[in-house]
Each structure stands twice: as structure tokens, then as C-alpha cells.
Image (cartoon, rainbow, N blue to C red; front, side):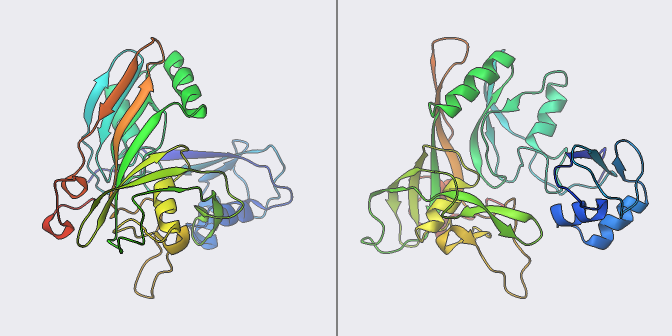
Length: 317
């Protein structure tokens, strides 16, 4: 397996009185304090373009750059299907397992990395998010006009997005045929990452309108229309009402992160295993008065012709 090209992570100091070592060890807890010290000593972290000592006091406004050396990225499915393309926008069907943006050990093994190979001069930019484990429709802008227009539609909640999700079976009288979740979503402290999006009373407004699509003997297929687009919204919302996505390694009851046992590693948002698919997408073309509608067939587990979860052997990871 080949190394990637490495990456430069840039920051601007906002805090007062922190040392360079404190800044990185407190802000980026995925690495230990000793590891950050070693990187600083070896000149991988530059302050205002030059080398610095671990105990140097930072000043607000100063520029930092962490030069991460090339590394081998985890294998992921890199192929995707283009459903529509013109000079202004792109609609693709993303496979589960492929990250959209760089992060969490992924740089070139991302949708954006693959698109940069196809469109090296003007790489299309995503208008909304899909988690790594989520499959289905993703909308991207190819022109400045499209990016502005589609972003405005997103802010005004004019882009219609419908998902399919699979949760536990439950009892018929426990989960109504239709229900709405308005649990606020915000950041909470989380080991290794510093912070994590989850259900929290002081979070931002979020709304998911849900409809039971199919009740199976050992699972429930749900159609979810999201009014807002908070990070990991559907995973958090369904977990917050007692129905986390089947196979979700991160979000459990209450919309909070699961506590691992001694034998388990701490889960992160990019971990796969859950069943979630962006099924339908509707928006107005940003450069002409035309309503665009797309449907992406779901994987077998999320197809309403599948009567029983155990009959499917495919995996979303």
C-alpha cells in the first residue's frame, strides 16, 4: 500500500497564555502529550512559519501549521456512481464506508480526494454532509453560482432530503406510525476527540420527521425527513427516543455515546456498521427554474421488499 502525500493542518491561535505544547495536547487529544512534544521538537509544527519550543507561550492571532508526514490510509470503497452532472452541479451515489471529507486518518481515500483526480482544477464541493457509514445521494456544486444558490437553499431549508434507517423491532405500541423528534444537538466532552456531537439540552434546534415504513420480526424500517442538517442528526435523534440505528457503534440510548467495555475501543463518528441511506433528494437547480428530483435505490437491508433483517448478509461496513 502506498503512502499518501501528507498534509498541513493550519490553525490560528485564539486562546491566551497557552504554551505550544498545551495548545496541541489540549485541542487534539487523539495524540498524547508526549507525541505532540516529539512532533514539536522534530520541527513538524511551525509557529509563524518557523520552528518553536514546546514551552513557548502563544499569542492570539499567531499562525500554526502541523506538517503531518505521509501515511498509509485505511482501505475504503473508492468507487462511486455519478447520477447527474452539468456545468454547475453534481449528484453522486456514495457508498457506505467512503468518507466525504479529509479527517480521522483519511486524506486521499475520501470522496473529495477521488473527485480531485477527476476534476483537478475545479473540484466539486459538497453542499451537505453524509457520514462515512451513510450511503446514498450527495449533492455537490461545480460553479460559484451553484454553490451560492444551493447553500442559500440549505439555509432556507428548501432542499428536501429523505433517508431510510433501520432500528430495532420494539413493540407496535411503543413506536407510533409517525413521530417527530426535536431533540437539540450540540457538542459534549468526549475522550480522545475533545468534543462530540450528541443530544444535549443546550444544543441547536434540530427536527426529524419519521414514519415507520415497515415493521419486521427483528427490525423496523423507518423513513426520515430532516428539516435541519445537524451532524449525525438521524443517528442521534433515533437513539434519543430509544431506537438507535442497528449496528451503530457510537450512539446509544438517549442520543449519547455508548460507554465501551474493557475489551472495546472508544468509538468515533466515522466508525461504520449502522444502516442509514440517503434515499431521495429534491431541490431547485441553482441556475435555472427547474425542480431536480433523485432517488437512489437502498441496499438490500433497507429495501422494503426485504422481510427479515437476518435474510441479508451484506454489511454497511
